[in-house]
Image 1 (cartoon, protein in one colour):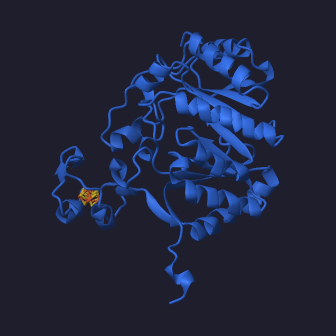
Image 2 (image 1 turned 90 degrees about the vertical axis):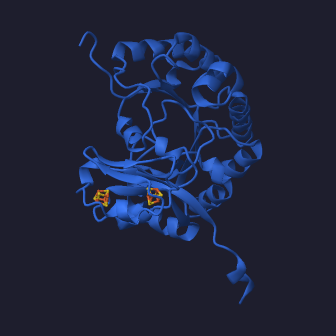
Image 3 (image 1 turned 180 degrees about the vertical axis):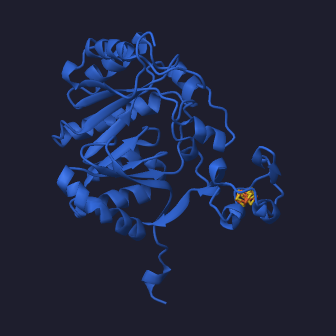
Length: 327
Ligand code: SF4
Ligand code: SF4
């Protein structure tokens, strides 16, 4: 056996590869979703990406009620009821035996290990649309920084291939991780959700101290590299949690004074309910059931607050579906 044969291939646990994305950076992109995140935002739109380990979910529309999964589960965690398959999450060990046995893919395993070489081969198939659209590849999640060795190697290899790279990050990890990831990242997509540390902890499970520290570190790095237009900040506009003028103004002051000149876009992303089904499939409560979309007027008012907060007004924009005022 050669020495090379003794070196285990670099792997990461990924949730999904999403093609033809237009929301995760410039141009048309392929987004790679990593599994596992250090935050637990109560509005998370990818709840299946939070746990670092594999999980199973049941998709009602695919189920033919054959009962195969129930008989195969080694833990006795499944029951076929009049309402469909019920998973006892206290008993389930996420072994995925049921998903492998299900004839219709109604039970689905979330989270698959990928080898670096296999992932590169898969995403580079999309090169044709990167090249014509000015797009590239975005690492998202979950949090790519929790699988930093793999993420850094992936970014390096993409850069060597001349592919534009974006890193979508929540910023919660040791600063050394950021230092590993930044050199091969062309565009940093950085989430700033809540300015008040205690409120941040209540809504996400952690204070924002490390996140703000890492944002400043990234800005210093980009400044030192003369990469002035390579950081976009994104703020989710969540009813009752992040959508106050005070919060938006405070985030704006932070961008203006601590990330000065390094942010070329600050996007306010309107809340939506599209992830409600994901919560149901994981047997998790969706705390925003019945919450209406914000109105366009509300989003525009928050954008005005953002523009008046001290940042360059040109960098502020908002996105997402809205409801008609008075409808
Ligand atoms: S993942 Fe494993 S333990 Fe959980 S329900 Fe499926 S077969 Fe049973
Ligand atoms: S094996 Fe699949 S199709 Fe059959 S009952 Fe289970 S989830 Fe439904």
